[in-house]
Length: 360
Image (cartoon, rainbow, N blue to C red):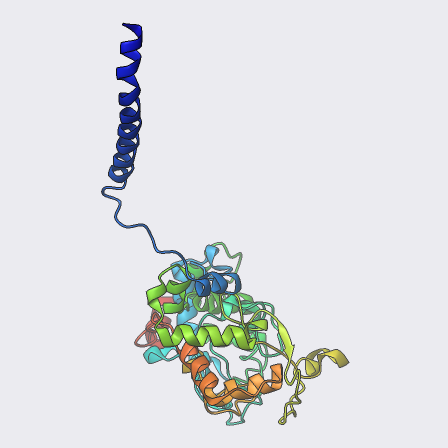
């Protein structure tokens, strides 16, 4: 009996093992039901890109204390021509955000209120707050400090001093709007410092995201095959030495003509601000967000096309002579950095008479 029982059970033991394995396989198969196919593996290009770049953050630095009233005032002030010495020029004159413009005027250099040309190209104001400093020479630490410069610059808006700006703001009827924007102000809220803070609050809303952000977020279909090829070339050539991070640049100073001398070197960059020999020809590295929309290029606006800018920068900064195909590939990638969320500016300002009436 015992021997007969063992003989019959030896064969079923193998069958039981097979049955268990089959059941386990079936359970694994069923456990995937309703989940859909697993996500495809991340490409090597995306993995490398994530090490070099980041999507633009949800909020710009410094924006967490901004209020709708402060942003609204800043937008009015940004477009207010009455804040120039002869009431002909506003911030928007050189940094165009009206009509879905890219935050720049697309001129080599801008003319000031008195018709005097500036000496440097006006950079875009869109996404500007993601940079580590402001102005080509980095003389302003943030958007608020930057906003205090052009209005008093004799070549730009040419107002004589801070008190004159405050007086003009009151004359134009902005006092009630300042009270709403700065409800905790002690005394008169119309101050030069609050003027700059309101402008900065508006500029912190000027964020332009692109398909490149979707790509960095894991949507590899957001870029075309040609744009991915351009990104590969951009990385391989060495452009990411300076152009990286969320803004794709704007995070460091670098010498213009690092490897080969810049042939149009009349502007000495940060040296003119600091007087330090090591700052000769040092400029803030420009961010490349929306770069295809902001020609002409370089601090002096001397380069009319993006193709020429890419070719010259490779030679000046990396010592590389790009082939025409490499240049085209990089330009194709750079065009993917053009944002689809450019802010539509207000149709018009509050009429001065209306502001003045509300002040009475």
